[in-house]
Image 1 (cartoon, rainbow, N blue to C red):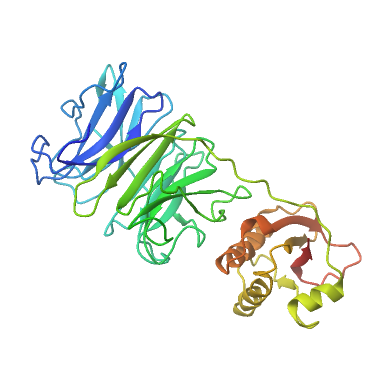
Image 2: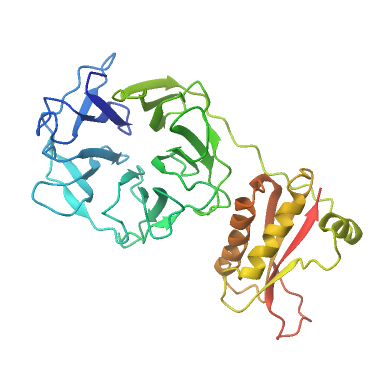
Amino acid sequence: MSTAAEELMPLLSYNGDYLFFSRMLCDENVGGKFGGSDVWSSKRSQSWIAPTSGYFPWNDRDNNVVIGTSANGKTLYLMNSQGGRKTKGIYFSRSVSGAWTKPELIPVDGINHSTSLGFYMAPAEDVLLISMRGEDSKGEEDIYVSLKDRNGNWSQPKNLGPSINTIGYEISPFLSDDKNRLYFASNGHGGQGDVDIFYCDRLYGSWETWSSPRNLGPEVNTKGFDAYFSVYGDSIAYFSRAASGKPADLYSSKVEIVKSAPITDARNFLLPADVNALLGSDKVQRSFEFDRGVVDLTTPQRELLWFIANKILDTREIKLYLIAYKRSEDLPNDTYERRILSMVNHMQLAGVDFTRITFSIEIMAKDEPASKPESVEIRFYK
């Protein structure tokens, strides 16, 4: 399937029968060699047959890319700019009587259409990952998530946080079927070459808290550009690779999925004297108070977290247990979870690995005065 043209963004249909990809700098494209990218596909027989692009109604003189397929194979999601339209965004096309319908725009507020964009739509059609430069981006393109509600509306894109996004760029997001493992490419996490492929795991059911990204290593990453990684059936992966100054080609690799190590929670709590020795003082506050409904950390609280993080960074056997206290069992957990996750994010940003942090939500003692603020307490254990 690789030619003298540039092949990017390989994506297998959910049933594994078709491989879609984007081809640029190709004389056979609708707009010619310099007219943008077209969607091409190859069908699997005993092997992959010669790819074609001729029967897709969405290919035009602009850039066209498949960004997702539905689980039943009846819907394709695309990133393209239809001829004559100013709007660039995501579209869907349905298979009806063996033919694909004209793409229809999916409205998602908050997408910055003036930046380089990349997308991935999960097969369940309820999670959209976005690579773009947003108002709160850490550097260049960051990865965001938009979720579809029960009414079919998409949420404002939310930044995935500092564990993933850097002052460099993060592109080509891909999500595992269980929605817990993210694959992406970045030039901001170091590695083998210019752009490497990484993976990380979603923690605590949150879209803002992730494990530290891990490089896929020299078996996949090279000194050049490696990106657009997607994996299927826990057995085979597809990605694009380009050596310096050369167009990208498609590659595949057999893979072995590595499961994340479980979070250790054997709590042998440190005595007060040991905590004071660890932090260098008995004056260091370890309870973070919040006004009712507030989830964001104050500047002094952020500075205190950085201080604590720096004290424990080199003491790997020390772990943190965060306890968020709420006044009543009847109160929803959302506010308390967000307080914890805000603290976890800042600790990770300071270099504390997620495997060293556990947490819980507990009820305040009944004899506590009503005037006492809610809080999150940090305890230390081995």
